[in-house]
Length: 182
Image (cartoon, rainbow, N blue to C red; front, side):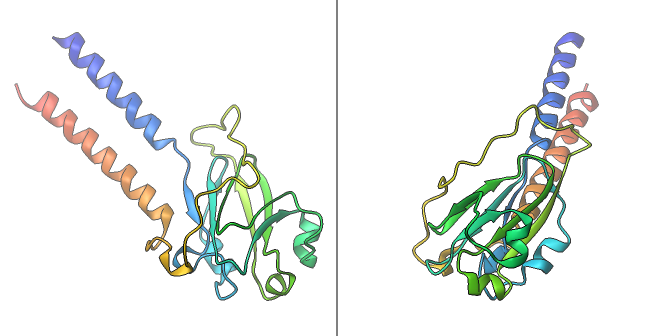
């Protein structure tokens, strides 16, 4: 009986550990999305981006998003693009540490502040993955009919952290039930 309990606990610890190692998906701009009216610098300021996290850009048909080198970011140059999307929902996997730069394909929107710089860090707690998934240019979710149909969330990262907290609470509750009842 003791061996069975040990196996169950080991399996649960492994499952909880695996669930907490997942990447965070950030919806850029939260409810406002990728838009000229969104204060993207403020949005990114309090976030810690880690290798494996995903940036989801949701935007209307008058916008696009392109990943560019630093020089293009600073000058809003849309000619030397690393990756881009224009379908209303575009995801970029942050597959390596370092600075990443994103701009709107409309140069005037970029000059108006529709650009994003994020610093991606290695996750020291879990180690970096052997090889993180690569973003495929043009791969994304189906486009929304209108910008107003974006999911109503205050922060996609908040949801992920709440889920992890409940997993820990459930796990320790299970342990109490397993060992507390005789």
